[in-house]
Image (cartoon, rainbow, N blue to C red; front, side, top):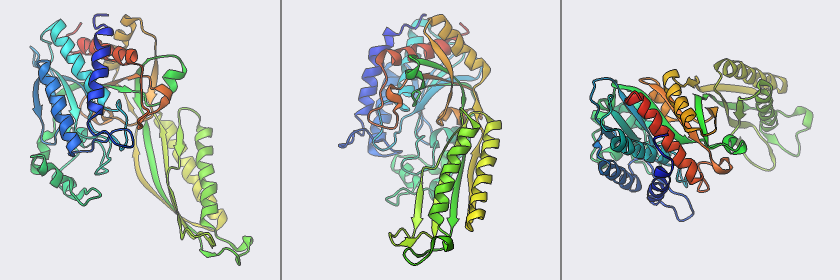
Length: 413
């Protein structure tokens, strides 16, 4: 394997530590939200790393940083990268690893292989997490043409600052958002930590990603009748919380019945009037279903909806099921998967095929490019946490595989 693991192991760990320090929080973890001061320093650091490795660097109209290794031909761009923002009290790897790994991979290819046939790029997406303005994937959605000035004007953070105002503070023009859209990217390959415990449980460091999960999400309102908790007999109650409790169990049962890889979660629940001595009159909850199998997604989704409606009817409760979104799974492109598979086989490193249970910029980039992903293991399966960690050698191995796959896609070797 030409891209040797030990060539990357030290650099990737050092660069991740430097990025992690930007936005470090006193209570642990780090926080870089879109267009905040820590984000700005991260953008500057990432730009300096790209320049040091001889890449041509530009910042697009929404703040995505693009480092380019120009090719000799006119074919579509081969790109890699990930996001530079974090969740609150986030770890050092999510997003950052794909940015650092992409910079190191392009730098290594420039040194060892010279000018590629197809132009290579590493993209540090300005935002993916939605932790400030709650509109996820601002960077990659802008590249595929799914954002506009109206959204920037409407989106407001907790301090009352609009996304458009935050852009202007960075010297960016909300009126130019449409110019971030691109149609010249032919392939996109993202390096990311697994954010789960499957690889570690099997003693593996690497995975060839086959698909990104589909996500179906509902907001559910269960309506009963609030009444005195001491004077209302059990047989005369219309207890919205008791009904919601049965619904939570039904959601779990539906996922178990569907079988792996389906998972379903009730992650948020609020009770009205939320008093000790009042029978709850209303409950608002969220239901989320995830699976990389579209047929399973549809059938399990119908099972969940049917079960919740039946429970409400049997208990004399009202129910409002509001489908928030139904995103289909995104399969990885065969040619990108083949480039990763061939590199993994050449390396002799053990790996497995694995679908992603989390969303990634890659699923947005699939609208304009052939896409793929490489996973490295996550210690304890922990992510979105200061405890997020991966063995340095596994991190180096991931970068080496990324470089090898990019070599195949951009140099034809």
